Image 1 (cartoon, rainbow, N blue to C red):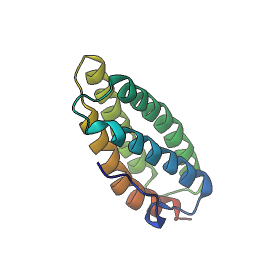
Image 2: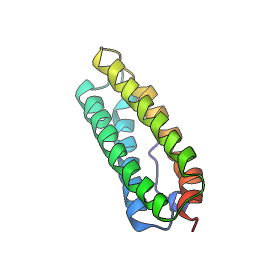
Image 3: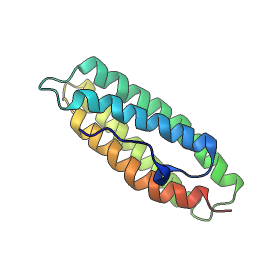
Image 4: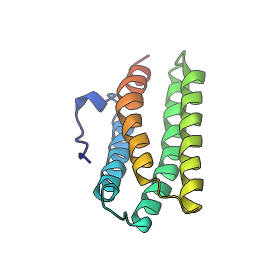
Length: 129
């Protein structure tokens, strides 16, 4: 898998949010290191999965509070997207704990999230006053 390089397309202009997004990119890149191996290390995948879920919940709460303060007009829809993503991550965790190796699916989900949600929804929402 290709390493994701942080670039200006990911930037929202809010340092705290950008720092949190950079950390999510780091998680994806950590997973990229093992996902293409013939037998991905389950401990590494489990560690990244747990970190992503925990950090995502923290990040979403922070971001939603910021959007509430700015009275973002699409806040409810944005929260719903966050909720669905969190459900998806928890489903992957449940499947992984049941013995399924879903490292590639986790990696694909996170990569799509970074490219789609952060570059479009977050940059539009955070830039709104």
